[in-house]
Image 1 (cartoon, rainbow, N blue to C red):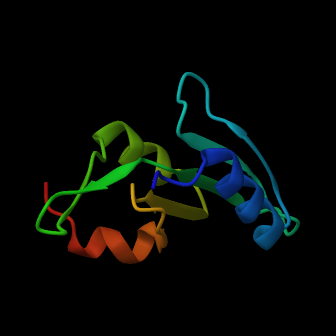
Image 2 (spheres, helix red, strand yellow):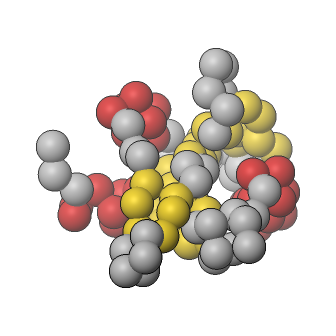
Image 3 (cartoon, rainbow, N blue to C red):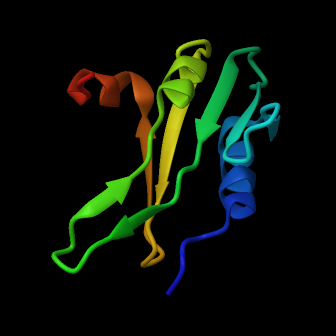
Length: 99
């Protein structure tokens, strides 16, 4: 099984947030826009993988982190290779990240 498409995720977020998202300049997995209530929104959709021990691995960069900090709503959407998708509010996740 492969990861769900980025396009499908973008459509889902657009429907749920009543927004229109577009690709962030020079970034294939970052999308930004405005919601109906004028909040700025950004999503990052890195593909993740599971190793043989069912441990997850994802590449999340400082560039992605810094972009997300600029928006009212910031989501990281983890796309696992087994088809699962996890939507995570960056404000909540960053409490658990180390530098």
